[in-house]
Image (cartoon, rainbow, N blue to C red):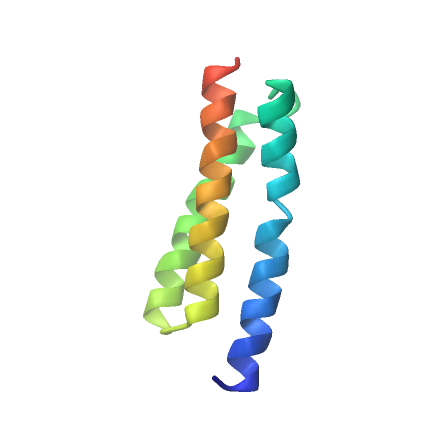
Length: 84
């Protein structure tokens, strides 16, 4: 693994893990009122495009970071739907 890929993986891990505290808080409080459904859906769409882009450029950091981010964001989006 070269240093560029490693740097990308570290950056992806940091930005992806930043969603985890929000997922945990939303799960604990069952409160999603501060989330805009439009923002969550647009962000989800953007992340899916990033995943596609990652495959097109064959970039493991872009692919992995965005798959995990999409999974965490999907949990928040599901909570938004469930806990209206």
